[in-house]
Length: 90
Picture (cartoon, rainbow, N blue to C red):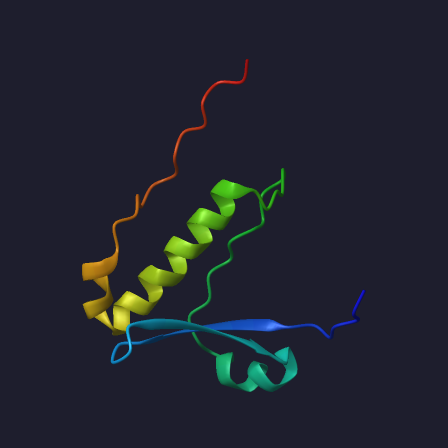
């Protein structure tokens, strides 16, 4: 298995090409750029789980953040904004 360094992830929307681009970036080089910027803590609950619903909410949060500065992306978004109830377990 390959040994990778730590990554931060940067998501960019290119409106001209209608593409979402994901960049893997060295966290140390990114730190000065994000210092003092808006940040949202997404995973600090007692029952910490990176499950399907968490991944869905993370993606929606990222798209909503991009839409703050590039509202034209909203026309392509057809996502449920609130958490989706899990069906009861049998």
